[in-house]
Image (cartoon, rainbow, N blue to C red; front, side):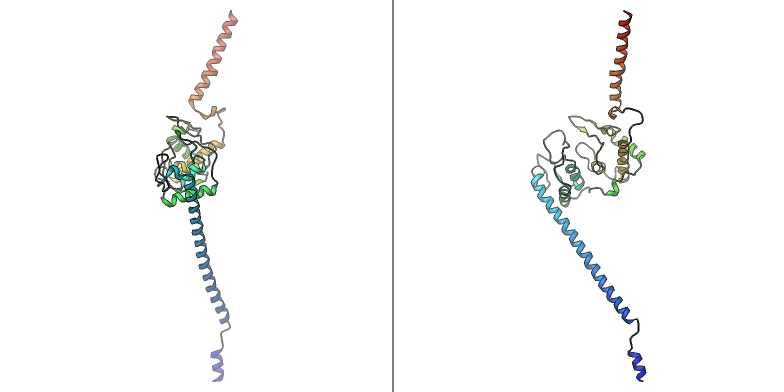
Length: 263
């Protein structure tokens, strides 16, 4: 009976290992839960701090024209619904704050840092939802350049020129040159339709098609024309002017020379 009692009270050799494993599991799970909660709280706090910083910047630099609640004034349009993408484009390219009233906002040196621009974008987006800033995956330049070129010629070339060299519009307005423009700003311009440009939302031109257009523009920017001197990529007007000035001029000069020689 004594031996039986001792065997009953004796622990299994693996009992200690099992207890340690259970303890580690509970400890690890508790730490992971606490860590994820702390990370979420930190992220939320950072986001709120960014919005608050954007609110201060907006009140000091933008509210005079656009109103404290984005409602707009006689000096500037409403920003309700424009989203973070529109703010990032206008401020990130230096078009805003506006230097002077005119047919359209002129591009100039950027007035805010990237962090301040992000704060302004976050603040405007927090008050009224709208198009968001494109992600890195949407801005890759490895799309279909052939499809992008076709889409660009159909939707964009009538203003920006087939090679993205820009062009004049009515009433002193113009479509800017697209050479050297960051992919992010090209995407945001299509998404938000700044100034005279129409809006090409994701139903008009899908994100994949936008990527293809960017790929096309970067391709022609990085690959010079194989046909010789490009004449500024200004199209048939520049080519015709070149022919008239130099071609017809050479014919006139040759005619005058032959006439003078015969006399």
